[in-house]
Length: 309
Ligand SMILES: Nc1ncnc2c1ncn2[C@@H]1O[C@H](COP(=O)(O)OP(=O)(O)OP(=O)(O)O)[C@@H](O)[C@H]1O
Ligand SMILES: [Mg+2]
Image 1 (tube, protein in one colour):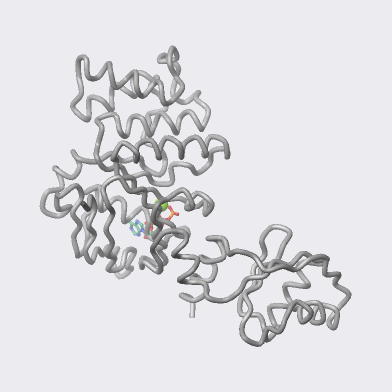
Image 2 (cartoon, helix red, strand yellow):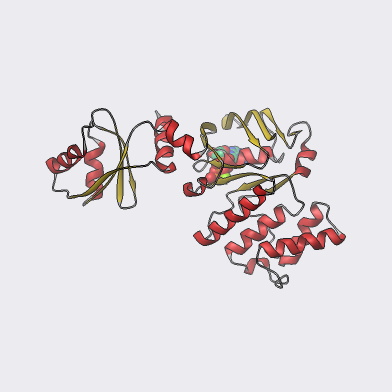
């Protein structure tokens, strides 16, 4: 069963098109990663799907309700964690939980039950009276997720929930997302961290408001990257980058920390060719070169390069 069906969804701000005729579906219980650079259109899409922003054209069914015709029903069926977290810093932990519980119509025993659950997942049991502003980023983020799903929505939208928190908190946050999904909650999550996309069942890559790739990580790697990728370790990385980017056997090149990745074409004859090219032009020492399994980052760099031309 599909819990989200997006049809020709478009948002224009004046003459500028932020989201351009996108279509996709998300199955019940799926974790969909929505990826794209700054300004790609991720938040605009999420706000439309949460019925907080009216589309310029197109429509979507969220939990079976039309975002254009039944926006109030959509709002009741979903949870939403906005890009800057939705918590009130000047309220205590408990006041925030009570506030969101109230917004979603919880009271009495049910509110108490859900409050305890939120405190538990946020590791805040016994700390209800703390001021929200004083919480560390990772804890605040868990509290924000807890309040966003306090009413047990079937569908939850998380807009860059992990930005600005440390890697360990990010990892444990993903465990929470996976728990929700295991219980049947559909999760649409945006992120800047490509390694996090590997935790998603499906991935959509959006660029300038258009979907440029979708599928699971394995499919993206096999379908969109046909050429071989080599990893190079050498001295004078910047110079080597300059030289290899002009070599006729190199289609694409990028720097990954202390390494270079090159995508080669059919003029590539073997690793000796790289060695010779580097030595012919300067005194660069090649320490290591080997063929690698592409990462999602390789795939995305490739797709973004392609969409630029
Ligand atoms: N209310 C608005 N009026 C005019 N332009 C807007 C408005 N909201 C967003 N935009 C523009 O639409 C584009 C997409 O913005 P959006 O916030 O959806 O990007 P994003 O993918 O969420 O980026 P980020 O990773 O920075 O959060 C941007 O160029 C942005 O400047
Ligand atoms: Mg955004």
